[in-house]
Length: 494
Image (cartoon, rainbow, N blue to C red):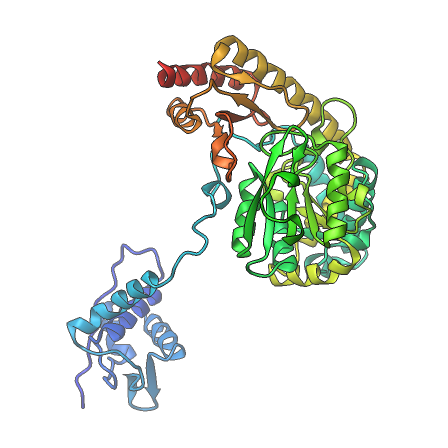
């Protein structure tokens, strides 16, 4: 009979249960070859006595090893290391093989998404003057919690808790799609019904889905130059050929590109407020683009990321409304209007694309949370959304005024800052010959986060500028950051 092999005693310093410690030690001994295939283990009584633990502890460890196939139990004989385990043995070289194999395997995988910017992959600290950051302390969280409780109670009373917490429609909950359709029809001039709305996990998700549905690898996609990094990432992920479309004072200018416009499959635009320049597309340019899309059978994706916050007058009517929803696909998001972690956006689709997009939504995450969708629907229907937008619009207007005043007082001719018509950020222009990336690096060393305009440019040369966010910062923070930015520009310009 083979002499039983005693495994090392587990350390009492570990926080895991004793049986788990014993299981891990035995498994490690088997995988490294210290315990060989076919070798008999100590009996549960003997091992329990030697380790001063309950016999049940040993039996639990043995049972887990048996379930996973590391050992076998023979009635009346004991427990043995499985003789069928491949690739385990007693050589030192074999002990290091798993680590080497893992390293080789990782080395052979090419990161095809290395172009995705850090700002999309990880949370960025809310440092002044970070862009696209809403004021979160002003969100009516008590109202949201009350509505959530009401939705849960109503579902329980009506025996609808399974529908609320179970599987859901990939296109989105009907209550939210109806609320969105009503809102954008009135506020943005979008032509749609609830049947045309697809709920997404934000605008980025919407753009990714749309480009995967509308294009094949190698198709030509037009992007505004400069452009939103998320749009560029979505186009690259879909393996599209990207054509930069320069932006002038009237918006994107198709007449200035070298590629024949009829070769373009999709054009992605921010016509109400171009990112990052803040330009509002002129009506003649809008009408010309709609005509081009119809004649070329091309699609226009309208990214309407923060038009709710127009400071003077009503928001600019959507491009989709001019088109009647034939070739223009409208994308909206609640990430900046409410709060980013909600991860809720939507697509207003032409009828022919609803089913393909619903299928794409099912593949890329099945569906969103029905609970959160119904709470948001109630938030909109009960008027809380409109009231929140009005409050925040006034707040952002005041904060921009503080920013303009602080920058003009502290930076003078070193930064020509513009007044934005809407939104959470604005442009500041540096003196000719400046390096906006160098200024941004210097600002970071002073605790200020500004985005260099050149970071968003694809091909078109632009004067040096900074994109400066003010939405998520108090007046005191804005004034203090303006002083720090002045110090940073002083170190660069000497």
